Length: 82
Image (cartoon, rainbow, N blue to C red; front, side, top):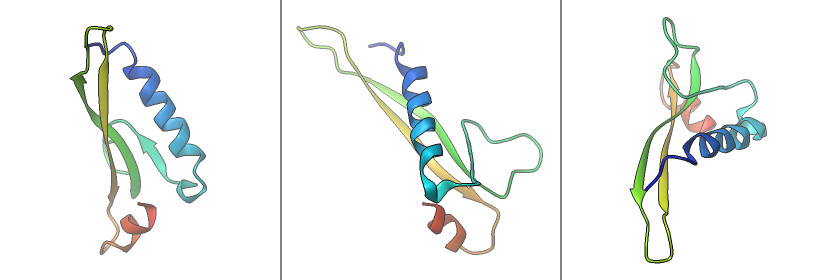
């Protein structure tokens, strides 16, 4: 099992999310911003890595949690971003 691809996978996920028109103007972060949160934002993380090695070689399955955090009243804003 290896975390060798973790940074590349996170960068690819960030690139894909930030290119999505529905997320225009929405911050995409990998940790909750310090201080006052920026209203509605997408957070990437945490990551879980599972060993998928077999007799043919090493391998790993990476699972990312992607969440929408919002300080807006109700759920509509977060659901719209989701």
